[in-house]
Length: 281
Image (cartoon, rainbow, N blue to C red; front, side):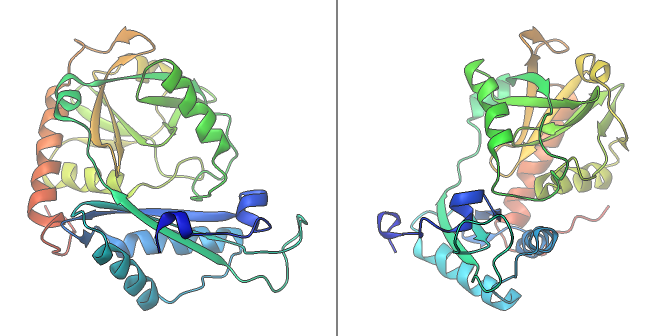
């Protein structure tokens, strides 16, 4: 239905409590990218918060395919969320509520070429969110407030530091490059596991680019040769200014340029073709 006609009851727990989870699936040439991985993550999130999955895998695939087909644009971002449903306001789970599903699709627009070539600016802030950031929850006020800090600083992202160590960004995963090695924090409950993050890791491994996972200190971040942020909408984007100071020589680095090209080639040859997307060395 048209967006203006969609309605959700005011007692839906997604509205009252932010009690729900969500996913965003990038679509290239009307082919959903790594849909199974997105549905895997959805199932993990639903299980973690105790919401019943309202559809089978086959039903999810069919509903998503139908939405994609009805849109006029080739590249899309399919957003969908599942809440615990409608019930009187009470913190405890309702016994018989039916999950509410909302889904929409919008054009998927990558960062403009000029931003890719020049790089972007970011700021840092203390990661003061809850301790289950691995759940893709619609309760995003912590992320919203942290992203607003960078918006007010005319920057594209806020890199997050918890107890002196890098976690992620307000709506992206983060890699740094130091001494020719691509580094990133390990996946844990403080980081949302990203599908684009996985693609970057696979591309790095397939093309013999040195890669390490482990704790990254604030000092590591500030002295890095390169910083990348990754997400479905940002793809892979270089940070060249951090907290108002140039990073490295203030331009996207050599490893970023190589990874960006590998990602674009992969998008053209695999994502748009609907082939099995796993990358082999």
